[in-house]
Length: 464
Image (tube, rainbow, N blue to C red; front, side):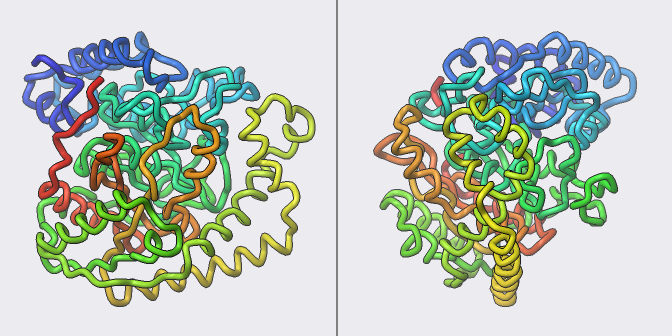
């Protein structure tokens, strides 16, 4: 096998199960790929090759004795560095956390470890999953694998760069206002923000308690569903965890789109926050392809995008302020300038404003729920622009909020980003979102897999 790092998670798992590829061979090829391209992408905060190789050898021996535990046995998975990995620092990409060593695995890491996954390293993030690409931090910002001069999206930027750059087949990110789906869109990946409460956040450094999610980032829809199978489940030690019965999220992947009713939320990108012509055209082409594959498309109207964004800010910022209050008072100079600038408004939002935002949130949830009375899924934009240059601070600041991801952090509904085009001007990926009722991840995956099979993007990869 000449290039195991190019295999999807599912392809690698099948070859491992058939004894045609070993976990050690897969990991070594991924480590070689990391050595070749990491200097250009800065995806990793900390590489752990010796520890990962120890675990890969143990997986190989166990598989030889009694077969694989499942499709993740021996598979390398990256972790955004706000997720605890026992015995290693969880830096949050910040000077403030350099010496904070995790005493135990986060709940999602424990689940992946039980499934046999190995962990080659901790991945870059925007500082505390909030700031932005910053050059005044202990670690450089991650870069886009399709063009390293460009932004990879954030805040799960290293996860996007590592998976998009074919260094790892899968990674975990977190999503409070779109931070799994943003890098998925910019790096040509599949990224899921699950239903609120479906995946435990225990052992993950919080940004905003009522908006935070952990989600999988992969190169294919099937891989994403496999990863969700491993990490989903009730955790009584996470106050936000939902009691939802275990299910197989891969079960409907081959059922296709016929009979599905999809509501296209056009006003998000046409009038609320107008998208670039290339993004708008890619969304229309995706809608046409979904219809050609058997779905019924209709136009759906939700509250204006700006209302969702305002409610997200009015909730996220004071919740983040509560997390960071002591550091903002005692060590403000230790944050990156962009992080400090984004955190500070949370210290001045009143309790009344926060309560009113939560009241409006309830109404927005009801509005999205009402939309599902006539459709099975929603289709909408992710980012309104392809990725800009990472060193263009003004353009990063302008384009960062031009997106339609935050509505579903506010409402808690599951939302998946999947590639739907390539910008001709810059050669960079364009993403769209498929959104479902709470706990309808299997249906979202069904539609996304049907689209993925019909679309021409699956075989495209960055030329690094």
